[in-house]
Image (cartoon, rainbow, N blue to C red):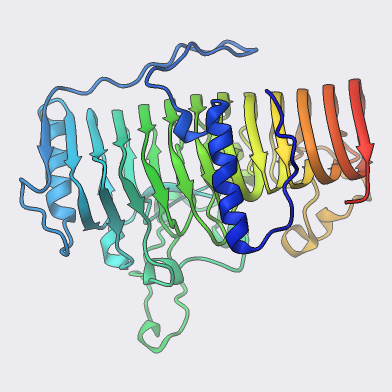
Length: 480
């Protein structure tokens, strides 16, 4: 990939908006990002065995929600859900969301059904708790629970999709479905992993004492993800825009065969990841543009003891021709690693103005790890830290386990990072090139870096690292 000659400067908000728009146009011309998405899916090449993924084929029948009684300015959940149910019962088809501004609560996709948003369609999700109940099975930050699930949810479905040129808008900021959520404590300390999953119900119903007086409920919600299929096969997300989410945006959990392409995410505020692949396999992400309040492209596989119990890896993920515009992480692996993250290939992508270009993170309590990751043909501009590994965390969340010493005994929750291959990377500007905090009991092993050109303010630091191989790397440290 050719590099942009001019580095990003410190700009006013208005100028920065123009710069981002200009950068997107330039990267579109180079075949990167949502606007460059071609009609056809090219053959998938990877340094591991990867199936030839195909779009789900939907039956040639459709239902238009307006023709079925939906009206703008009114909540139309029941109409949309009835269309989904009827089409699925007949063998599938497309539910058409026509141009207009539509309001809905949680929708549940069924096998064979594609939710298609026509150009000019805006589908807004309400902020009322009752619109996301009853509680459904899901996974939140790597722990299995029952709660709101997702704005668009599916479970045990095959051949489902969300397509079109329309926009999905998340629940309003500050609405009850957001403000009554679990917060202020790490999830593994909040949910009893020894309890049966069926008893882990978080819906505000079972204990609502004092809510009308503004008191915090002892049984809060877990805020809904935006789109999250669970235990599904052959999932397609194509062309649509996700905007103003209150939690993670696109989150396949326990899925097999996922295609995400030509999608744009524009989310701000904490915990609004772009795409989270959670214990899923055979995934293609291409021509996607993400601007996020949290990590952009994220790979996860379960958390702590609960993730070890489930024991489902994320494997065979290809990310190509994608653009990250903002967020703490460009590509992040972890920190939920219990089921292992294996076989990830990210190539021909650009990361602009993210805090960490590539971020590999876990904790001594998280288990599993990350292995067999390939990164090739990446451009970074205006990043704070180009490459980061953090296996310790902070005392706030894991107590004394965040201290490097003493060396701990290796056990089932001890994570490992190994076999990470990085090549053909152009880092135009970054504050720190490397920040590696592994653990002394299992050092980071097998890091290979080839053909890298980097300009940084400082090299950074490394601790508890085994063999690192540098081949044809040019590194310049300059005052920025």
